[in-house]
Length: 160
Length: 160
DNA sequence: TTCTATTGACCATCTTTGACTATTATAGCG
DNA sequence: CGCTATAATAGTCAAAGATGGTCAATAGAA
Image (tube, each protein chain N blue to C red):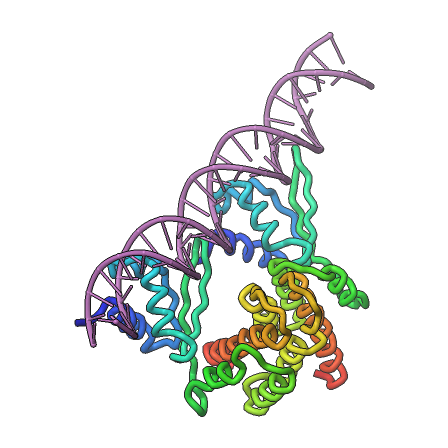
């Protein structure tokens, strides 16, 4: 008995045989299957999660969409999933930096991107005793802005 | 599904590829796109704000106009300072995203870097009611990891 | 029973429109 | 010439429209 969720899953995967990504209208798809729109979310959550090798992006409002991207698992399958598990709910700066370095060595991120990431997770960016998210975000963001400029200087020095 | 607002945004930016400013008739433009004149104001407010690096001047009455000017920051030594001041101790996501877009349009960061930055300051990354910095960092960092993979997909899609 | 699937009520976000308001130029009048 | 009415613009703001998200209750399958 092909469950509704299975049908939707296969429908989406059929759409993705060619391309590694699809974009769809949640409501349209729900209507196509005659189900509640939230059913689509259920399918996405249970069959297209990160540990299944997919990433979901979406946008609300007029012209809204849901985009499903299949990750290419270079090397180990579910590398991202492994990294996310490694990080878990808590990670110290040293570990985070080690992971960033690893990503760079694997040529998955550039030098600049690695620097950006380090700046975002640095002690300096996050060690403030604050609670309001805007305040926290400001701290993270200021650090990233500084890094952008450092990168520009670096590029200039290297005549890029 | 190119939204009206997106079309109008691109239309205006196309007009500005040469010159750093354009002057237009609000009603004419609205008629050209078959929409309400106030739609133009919406686009200006959401895509051409000061944080996006633009200044709007206008005049009503006969011979009225709307002028859009791209702010010059070339050689401006205090651009970083200005941004840091703008951010201050608190900044909302919308403003942060506007600034990131601005940096990208000025070719100061790449598409990938902009995406990384957005992921680091996103609601999703920071809205957790947590206090321990390691926990918070984990949230930020997980988001960035996902972004790295999105970027890889993006590059592959664009055959870079 | 226990795990998975489905639904629906309520929420969040982004866009578009329209009624009402504000400003400016110009034509006509005294 | 100076004033005023009118036309020509643009601005504001709140409501409606268009999507997607979340979560808890319920139903169904194993």
